Image (cartoon, rainbow, N blue to C red):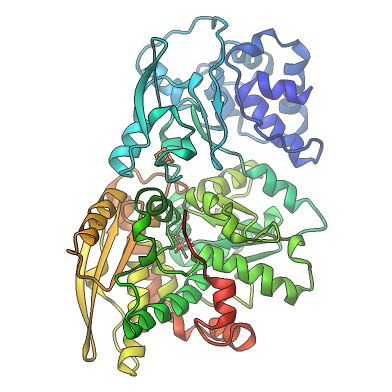
Length: 560
Ligand code: HC1
Ligand code: SF4
């Protein structure tokens, strides 16, 4: 019955399914939010009755105003019967948006009136992409996905095309999305107003894990999440992580860690790799590989550039390896019973976590990725208000992070963190200043030369994949005289990832950048090499940076 409701009633059934999942009453369906375009009209009333029953009596999850806004903007009192009647006239978009219906807003703005849908033959749904479902039947040809893909991300995986006299938008050559130039950045899903492009659901998996008494559920929080979370809830930057940690503990997480710790670990490995390439005549420029959309782009569009990529796993995946190979042992639990959830500003991180490179004997290092938006949705669903939470410090063992790890979330941050290590290693002296202004800021391309003792390091930092493509062209033509290059797919870096709430103004992005640099300035530890809990993991497990154990656990090879 519930499955029928899910097929029939779109958004409301999706909510119901979430609730049943929460209570462990149904299995996670493969595609619970797929809408069949008007098919619901032929469903028996009981299908709706189930949804209504949940809405009215069992778990009052959503604020009534939000429901009313969705179904009847003029009603001021929540009236389930009326809402159900309204629902039967509602657009059956089936997207997972719960509180704000962009399509309805557009419809109002453009004065669209609705008539009963005629039955049409559903167009095939492309569900092969690891993180995105594409349902062409819901497309209203607004063109926003195409615009964001081409103009913001610089990828052009989507275009207008005509099939059987029907104009639609989709991948070039009608191929499944994953087989196009799509880098899985996820930005198209954030602008699609109808659910034609949606992210595959992750919340139900996480709810299920935190309700499973057999599992130890651990979270890591990425550097750029704190900047967007601070902005969304207007809380003090210094309080964001302890408040987030408190909220996650209330949701049921057992441990909460900061990905900045793993960013410090990455710098130990990537900085050492860079110095060894410099010393031994390795492939230069070395290019960062922590942005998964950039790695996807390289594999698909520029495989000849892959030898330039650092062999280091990203901080997300390094932390995954540490969890399953080290922390699980400390806790005395089997790796498959340690469920590791990343909280990221980025949907491509979901793609990265699913890569076969990052699994051991079929057990993923990172089990599930939530975005900042997902966590905000969970807090809303469970009535967790960050403003009234008592801050809870992050858990020990990986509890200390450096400012170098925090600035990873901004374009230029990885390069600067690496310089803070390289400067000390090359000169053999402690550094007095830590800021490298030449790599900071929101410009899409930054170039600078840094003098380290008797040596010079030539750097380029690019964000936005169209800028990366220009750089690739220059590398190919021998006109890229750099030693180290940082690439982030999203303009400005992870702070602008598709999993963070969209910044409304440029000043929001500037503020996010500012927050990370201020947290760095206020940090007790400024360099990755000074992080005592990173030093501990070398003493207790890895030996030296770039050692054989590190290579096995923390490095990879990208080739397609
Ligand atoms: Fe990023 Fe990274 S900085 S890629 O932008 O190297 O997403 O925040 O988590 O892994 O640390 C994203 C951010 C993030 C990784 C780190
Ligand atoms: Fe384009 Fe990113 Fe959407 Fe892929 S996920 S189609 S790259 S916008």
